[in-house]
Length: 287
Image 1 (cartoon, helix red, strand yellow):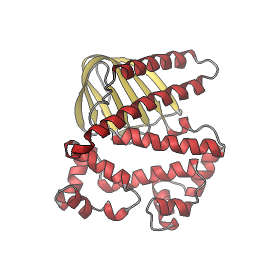
Image 2: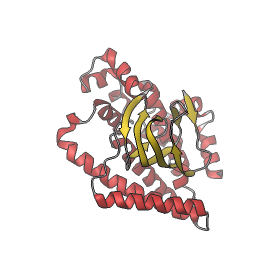
Image 3: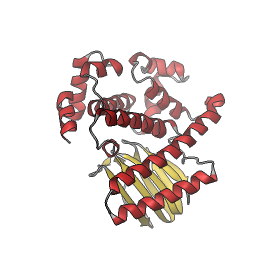
Image 4: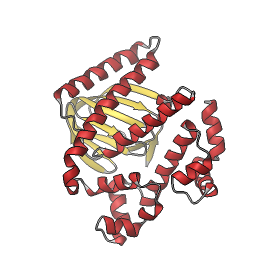
């Protein structure tokens, strides 16, 4: 599977495409996409879903995504990493960053990952369209205070999306069974990431009324990766965030996220990141 990295903390571009020549790729960053013109299908983790003018998509790190074009398409892509929201270094600012990262988790992982983002209020649609237009102009002109202004625009867009996510969750709370099973499973994993005992296959099978032999196959079918790989990767992402933006010790982080102990966390972290937690924190502070 191909992969694509983000070489700067923030990128924005508007693209006109008549066909998508790249195969679906795994992107290692957050992305908000608004379709400005055109129609077709978007590919998310090997599943296809229609898009049209005005559609808004949210993509997370490690999502595999691409497009199949039906009519010539123009879209705006806003790509950013956690670093974009965390340029400053004071304790107060780091706390703010941690809150924003939690907000990002809420927005990007609690909405229906396999459908377009549903913006119900016409005023919110107009506001997002206006903000995207202003972001494009600000990004292209590259004047002083550009980064601060772009952070502000992203903040406003995320606030609007969060409001609509909250509304969507609220309206479906009484009928959660109508929510796709894979979404409920992903939400369960993220809500209980600190409790390994209820992330095991047997528990998930019982909780979601699946055969224990089918849980792994079902999860891979809809996400494109194994259950254990997904859980481990998500944990490592949370460890990286806490190392970079909190004052928690490695031992405290291990306890919070359900690792056996500090040694267990360190082994897993080095395996997936190539360096120790202490080295990662040092590099993050120097950056």
